[in-house]
Image (cartoon, rainbow, N blue to C red; front, top):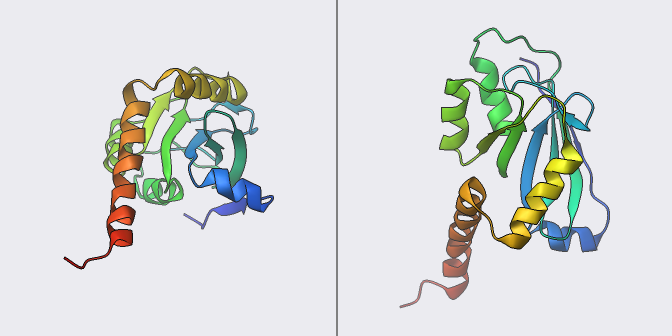
Length: 159
């Protein structure tokens, strides 16, 4: 599998401030507007940073056309591309990919074919405001746990 093409979008220093605390979520999409692809054969991921107040497109990763052929080698590149994401929205996903995604802390979220990304982002933000449930609550807890190591380092190792 060839190296994926990656476009990262950054604006200003103010973006960087809120992006540090935002969740990263990916969508399997051909048109950057709808979820319309199976994870294993997805030609692109559209990645957004999301918090209660903002949702911003921050990255697009293109893989080219891939077949649903059972070849799991392509999963390695795709899962690596999702580094830092808490979820990937998709049309379908195989059992092996689910196991690999969840083992690295990425929740696969199956939605109907053609689900509008903007509506999914709105629903995610609504859940963040009202109190996260299910996979989102686990993802937020995991993010908090990762920060504890930074806190320990800041305190120092003197005892």
